Length: 151
Image (cartoon, rainbow, N blue to C red; front, side, top):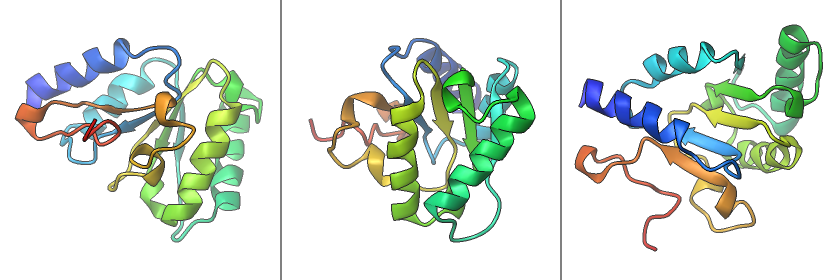
């Protein structure tokens, strides 16, 4: 699965529609960190969340600190590409609220989420349904598209 799935992930990321604001890297994708390295090369803003049972306010504060340090602005819309790592450190509902709020402020930017579990906003039908995507998705690799499964 390794190299082929990695190439698939890069291809899928590069061909996402512009209206996709939140991209979850599939939790079962074993080459997550290789993909992250590829994305960092694109001059992305990298945020590694620290702590446990993080609340929405914690996530927002850590995001703003990283934005300020890396692009001299707390505005996520100025980032272009945000890489949000270790999102599973947040409480599930708090992460969902954070991601919904973030999607509203991204403008032309995009956030790529790395987590060991699937954030709820990607699988529950809601107002963000047309703004979220999983990468990579391929049934032959058992990398399901949870955002569109069952449709």
